[in-house]
Length: 101
Image (tube, rainbow, N blue to C red):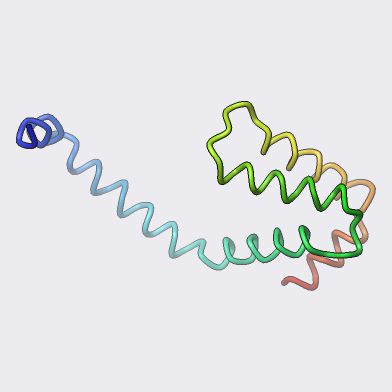
């Protein structure tokens, strides 16, 4: 059974190796940016200058990203939070970004 699986996947082994190496290179290259984004998400979710509904949208959106929910709750919550941060709470958003960087 395992030998049959290996035989079936043999033509794709080099592709699998290339994709794995590419993902590893991207992880190393973008590691700093990813860390900054995670710190920024945490800061937005916990900053007291933002009203609770905006913080809750961020928390629910990030929490839904970690769970296998099919109908787009995470995109809706994070999209609404981004729209509010970019329009109504722009000055607070800019202050938070400057503090995190």
